[in-house]
Image (tube, rainbow, N blue to C red; front, side, top):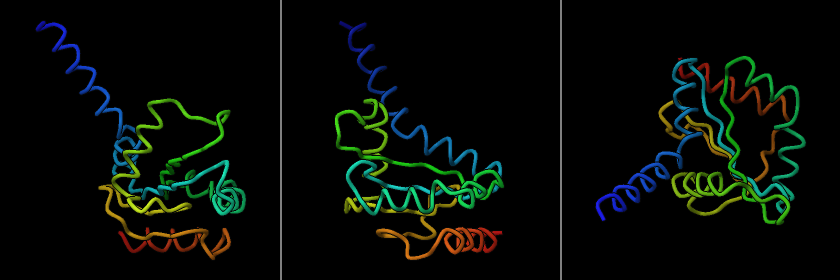
Length: 147
């Protein structure tokens, strides 16, 4: 009985650790490289503004420069609905945990700029009104003010 109880505790503990794995890794990387964290909540296969945000901003070369130039660490917490696009159980749990912490209202898209401790510096509800260049410039400006 002790062995069974210990095994159950280990599984629960391991699941709890994994639930924040991407965010904890992002915090660690952001801290080491003096980066910010951009956390985006999306519904990639049902939310039209989310799809536009990814196509017109996140998938652009200008946005990708933010990652390659160590300005941001990007995390996408996706909540697809179509069966063919479903995420792994672990990723679903992790995204739900991120939503519990940062997106209690269930907004889509909802984008947050966090510091390396996870503190919210800026948020965008819905599709940002800025184009990619202005969006990137705003993030760069916030990072400059963090120094």
